[in-house]
Length: 260
Image 1 (cartoon, helix red, strand yellow):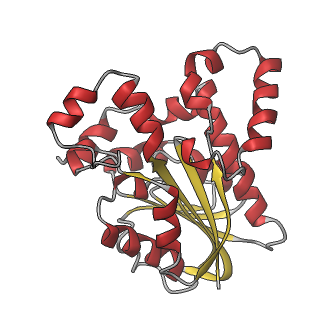
Image 2 (cartoon, rainbow, N blue to C red):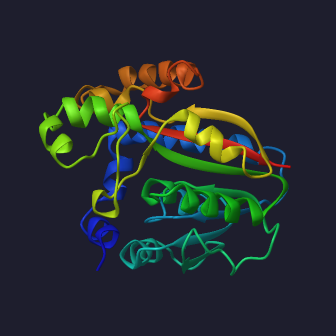
């Protein structure tokens, strides 16, 4: 068992996205998925790194034809356990770095909502993005999620008093970029690194969105909100989530691309 398998075998991803603070990321991502599907007749959708199926199953239950690829067997088993057999979804084990099971230009929408969290070299990230673009139809959309560097420095390194440990283990560059290895589970990036990846593949960026914005800085506050206050928080979040001056401060971002 590798580090990633061990992590997800013991992690409640559904619980995170169903929590009040996790709903911000979920509803934001769904908002932009729906935006990308507007005007597309009978769209075909691929989710690479589908996890336990929070997005794939939701879309399949809405009647969309979905292919879900997941690396971790434990997650895939949970995903399949949620299906009743009527959903137009195919779920298989696979790797974001090799989508050869799918022909070129197969999907109207390709979602890569988890793999970039766990790819540690530029070469791997390019390979995953290249494969996602390859299987997407011309004019189709690719949604790619990232974990951002500086919120991790603020909340983990300083907020959880881990500075001494990360310095001792050489986990920061002189300009405060996190250095991750597979044992660390998550890879952190900055907005300029995302832009650099986008320039390598035949796409144009539509938007770069902060999927949780300030939410993760105030989880306890968000979770304690009543429904009316939470609705106002979502309204505020949607008002600012595309503001580029705030993007790098979000824990998660969504890069919305369109294939040439």
